[in-house]
Image (cartoon, rainbow, N blue to C red):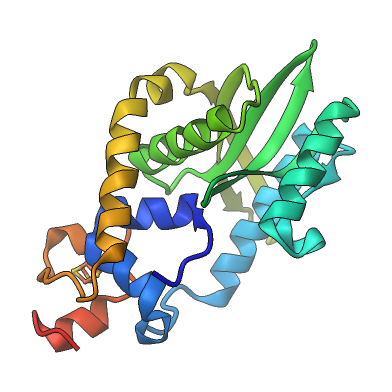
Length: 228
Ligand code: SF4
């Protein structure tokens, strides 16, 4: 297994397909070329950043893009929490080789809450599984977070090409706590898959598009069930 830290994104990939996870970790070069237009990706990023800044102004960053490593981001997150910083963007948590980033960690009346900012196109399952993985990692770091919330937003452009946004905030804490035993089983299963030496023999099917189109689809379509 070439994976140093196992992120929430890798976990989500593995819940969709063992083979996708195995390829992602061991054969990233086989991934299909990006299918989503760059302009659409950029538009989503701008919208999420704008909404985050609107809801949580004056936060400080703790992400890997500014520290250079998961461990340093975790240390910086803990430092900000200790110093009672009100809002931390891209707060990071590391437990053994599990790793998660939360979009916003916010202190409200002395309690810490996480917020995941999602486009409304994302499936409910993805948001819940992502939150459940974050809960699993954060709880094992010995950090107390009192609530987990999602911010889902929808954008539309007006005739003058100006962006308008609706959003909805809801707590998912109860649902993700309920899932914790299953999350542990899934993580253990995924580590077993990654310890194997052969690509899992899984044919393409409906699962390749749900909840999102897999980025190894072309590879799988042309390679069939044959291992490399
Ligand atoms: S294309 Fe389908 S079978 Fe292939 S890795 Fe992706 S989800 Fe799995």
